[in-house]
Length: 206
Image 1 (tube, rainbow, N blue to C red):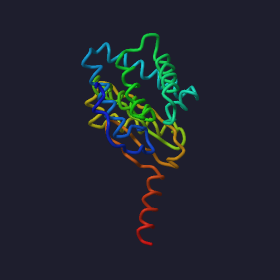
Image 2: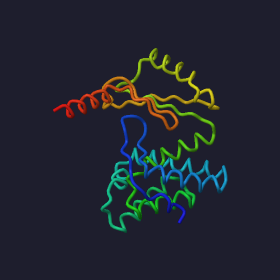
Image 3: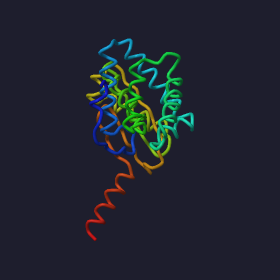
């Protein structure tokens, strides 16, 4: 089956941008390769569909509940999938539909956000784009964000990319400092990370 290689173990999400587990990334790779093998136009169509589904899940409590509930009956899962397909557009591609059928059959619909995130990163890499997410406990002041953007633009990864997109994401769990995600790398300069390290050291010394 198209997404047969997507079945394996997970990695928990951190404080930054990434929600993608090891399992989710396998599905991401499977759907990306299937879409690209078909054509660049299909790749663009699948990305548009997946982003529409992502937005619908975030904005529709019923859809969010659906993907996070592994105990649904077959009938309820089929109804939920129909709602996801409707969110994707009038005529969703077979690749998009097959992805969610397999996620549903494998009890992995909860990985939806990570699958789509991973897929978007693969598409960005294919197009030579570098998406940078700066996660902070509160919106960054303009002057600090500008300084960070200047530093990031001087990085080797940014200079090799055709385009650079920088986004500030707010997550109160960071407590302070920032977490910078770009490509497959994460730089964790958060207060939460320091607190976790301190707690670990204290527990080892007891």
